[in-house]
Image (tube, rainbow, N blue to C red):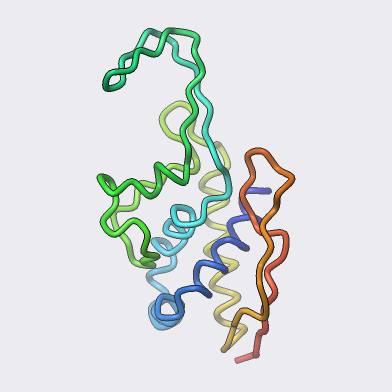
Length: 161
């Protein structure tokens, strides 16, 4: 539930920072699914993914012994220029978009599909109800959480359709 709530704030902030992409999503709701994936990639709700090596592993020139902890920095993974074209640009229609916020393989988040559907429904309702949404001040990021990356406040102004 925290990932979904954070996704809503972080995703809206990403859209508000890219008015052309917000307009694009308003005009073409078929982009909602890739837009939510892009929100997850561009402003992820977590900072890192922790894993433990089950066998000795070599990554480049680094040996990782079995039992060692490895931390994947989600923001770095999701902005990897070898994986994403123009990684610092928010693109509501980006495909493919294999962002890493929910982990993968046997460790994928069990609530990932629900979070995605909730976000798609919430952003669809938000765009349906409000003809205009704009920033009304400077957002504040949480500073008291180790692995949660989200907005404490997101001041906005809305006007009904």
